[in-house]
Image (cartoon, rainbow, N blue to C red):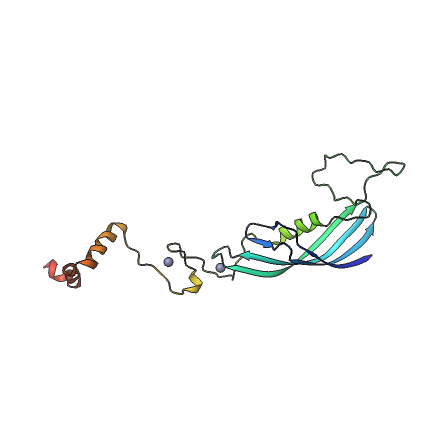
Length: 178
Ligand SMILES: [Zn+2]
Ligand SMILES: [Zn+2]
């Protein structure tokens, strides 16, 4: 068994809609390489720097995500004389294959990280989100609300503001009803 610690820089386009690993950010890998019958088993942990937006309020958030990795890299298929043969491509999800002594970790890393990232990250569990009327972030404005005015009366409300007589009438509603 071989243990490998390595830091690589993140490839571009590693993430999901609202959460991603910043390109060029360091990815710390602590991996074990074990030789097994079929090939080389790679397992361990990968730490990535995630940057995201809250799914409710779009506030930027960032955290470090530890992602477990486990993948068997198969030896290439060989014929009776030891020559590498091309495998038929009918396998739905073929194992990654060792190419000489090289292991291409990027597809494995990509699958593991993308699976680990949340589809709907939140800045905090009870984030109140954005005001549906004006779009301000409700956590920044506790108690924020709008007077709900029937749009048919909104025009009249505008008139009342400019008409002192109307305002007086509203202040004394009983006077009109008698
Ligand atoms: Zn939020
Ligand atoms: Zn609002």
